[in-house]
Amino acid sequence: MFFGGQSVSLVGTWIQQIAMGWLVYRLTGSALILGLVGFLSQIPVFFFTPFAGILIDRWDRRKLLIITQILATIQAVILFILVEINIIMVWHVIVLGIFLGFINVFDMPARQVFVFDIIEKKEDLGNAIALNSAMVNIARLLGPPLAGIFIAWKGEGICFLLNAISYFAAIIALFLIKISAISGENKSKKLKPWIEFKEGFNYAFKLPVVRSMIFLLALISLMSMSYQTLMPVFVKDILKSDAHLLGFLMGGSGLGALLGAFYLASRKNIDKLGKIIVFASGIFGLSLIFFSFFRSFWFCFFFIGCSGFGMMVQLAGCNTILQTIVPNDKRGRVMSIFITAFVGIMPFGSLLSGWLASIAGTPNTILICGIVTILGVSVFGRQISSVNHSV
Image 1 (cartoon, rainbow, N blue to C red):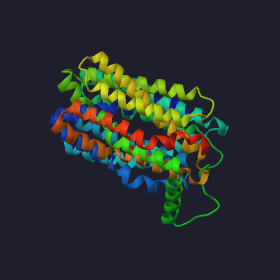
Image 2 (tube, rainbow, N blue to C red; image 1 turned 45 degrees about the vertical axis):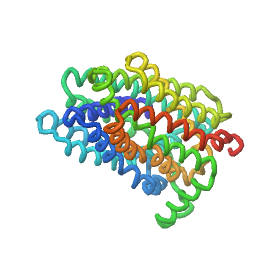
Image 3 (cartoon, one colour; image 1 turned 90 degrees about the horizontal axis):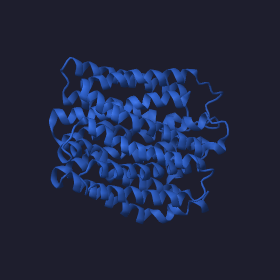
């Protein structure tokens, strides 16, 4: 039920994400504004997600997820109405993006930990996380091409409506799911929020392997994941094409990520997973470097697919190791730090990439993203590759 409901909802999420990027660039024609919108819509995750982890460790995660899905539905409906009555402005997108950012402060870490809650055999955790990643990337594979088709057909408004409708599948599934207890609830003690936050923070950064993974994720999120923000500019100005091709190009990234998720799902344990994470990060960086030099759709499709593979294996691999070694009573807080390192840093990357693209051009910015990824692996890779000696 969780897999089915989230799969439908995430397709809608990707449709909306592509439509929002295209809408902003259509309204402004500015890569810098595109980066600014991405920055403002994601910045709440950076500032508030670590503290949200305290509440996620205490609250019923199923009920929390139902609330976040309902609020996200409202946000999508408002976007649809503004576009359809033709009064949409960039500041509308910014305000509604910030609102969705606050929803994600609770939604993203709660969803990660909820996967642990509903698994009956905890030794299947790695496979479940990989399958959850596969679910995300099936949506990533289907959503962008559909967004391109619908934008070309009816404009951005229908994309927001479809996303609003898609949330009902997730809401219904969450109502039907029953778990006997709140797995993450810390019943043994109830400390002051600041003390609980400090406890989770200290735990995460005292372990060398966890610390290295968080720093690598933060660096890649800052300088490498922001290439996605620039895809509307790359497609329109470099490839001289439209939203239809943008959707299929981003679908290539989703296809590569899906293959990476299925690869991880086929593994029986975390043996050598640290070395695999380092290797995958290298693939991610090299793929971005090659991508920046080509102007042919099929070459771009191939290399963005390779980057999606490397990114997903790295991200899901880190997720698996963290959820395997972290105690249950600290899982919500540590995973909130994980989300902050990956998603919370992205708005700074979006702003930085938009600024760099306005100065150095989009292809050179993507080239820099790839080089930084390789440098990050060289700095943090040794500690991560030794993870088998730490778990």
